[in-house]
Picture: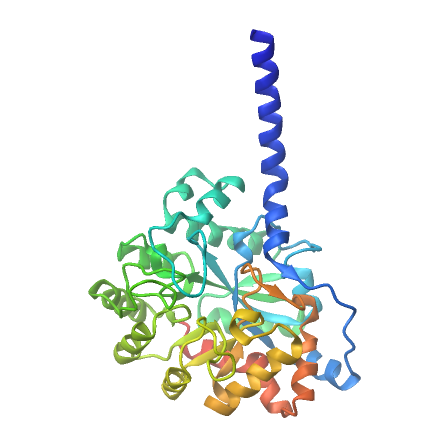
Length: 387
């Protein structure tokens, strides 16, 4: 009997080891899909222009996954080699801390079981992250810090206008250097404690979104059950973020939260990954009227690359959403917000960003408009609103 128990224990241990070794990568590959396609044809004009651009993206969830971003992978959307092939310069890395089971764009309960807990365990994150959303955000931030320390020729962390200026200076002699910034995917990462805003700021977070797929202590989600605006806790949190110089992201927030945040914020807002209702009537997108109000207050709207936001994922569809946005709010208020590695399906990865430049030229945008949308608007915003 003892012999069979030992065999069973060994089989169980081997099975668990195999699961922990292979399951995270399999899940990553299944969730972060790039549609199979033939190599895109990029014209000489588009390639020459693309090579001269400073490209910035407001939203990627790459830190969630068990990949060493210094190495190139054949799955997922981003890593440093692919970003460099695509001439990407600035990347806001957003930290996902909770995702409800059955996640959808219409209605999610905040009480639904959480997918990220299981993912954290499967990827062997520290035990503290199994129960604390703040610890999950901090752990993902620490991954970026360690990458910057190990790979300084390829990644520099940016937390201030001074560091941004230093990054731009260093990039003149090292044109493949990537500037990484930190943001949260929802302020449930505070664990309901206002003091965690300072803690996250001290650990490099410079953008915080208020909600994700469910209502939280700050207020309603666009995909939650209440549709409510900012709570008193939410107002207190917003005011503290503004006082510290944390940029506010209202992607995923209920329309009433957006209205309330616009009313109390003394700085422009960001919608870090989205589409436009008038272009793509999706429950993922807030109204065009609110988008106009965000832009009128100096804000930026970052266009995503996936079907749920722009009703397609081809380069031409991305370009069409950008063209629509420029027509709605003006060329100074549109950016890129890929949602790379955010469990979305795209038709290109970070190495193929030139396809956007090609598509924008084909959509008859001017060189100035393309430069702004592809990164200069993001750079100007950071130069103005980073601490």
